[in-house]
Image (cartoon, rainbow over all chains, first blue to last red; front, top):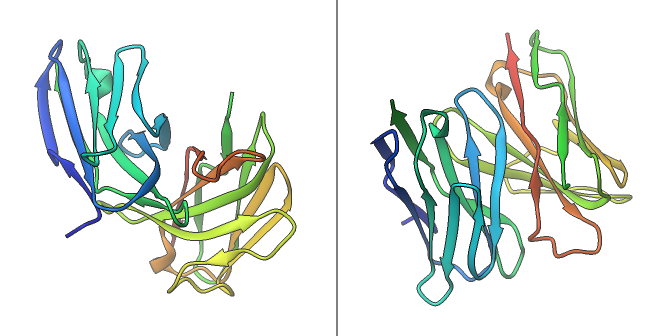
Length: 109
Length: 117
């Protein structure tokens, strides 16, 4: 079992829909990152959080430390949101990041 | 703030040549930088941790003589792939941790795609 699990692996949505991507982890962490990767493109840091909730534009990230779970929400989704979304956690002991396998999101117009 | 750049963004080279990739923190100093590699349809994997002024720490299975890392200043780390072979073709990504902050605070560069022919 992977130490960082994301769900779903693939997600297709219609433009305007509310989207949720989930991340569960099994190790003690110091922080959790949400990253965005466009096809053939680089990595964009979306959020880094260790507790609570953060919001940036149409994106919201939450984390529940007790349940070892985080969610990334996209409101009013748009085709330009189509990308791979990656959850990564920093181990408490080493701060080294462990990455999930990513969620491929396709938002159709 | 907290912008990390990588250069080049794309590189194609012949087998046997060496390729240098730069990672720069543009608006902050970074005592620690990390180098990752991503093969197609796979997760990012940590290759090494680069500390300014000292030797890099490599992850198990990563050849230090093949992937030379130099972190000579607080804003620049370089990764040199020596005698590159087609199996080294991959997406290389760096991240930087601002000096004085927890190492968990990492900001990612856009990545460098390497194709070895």
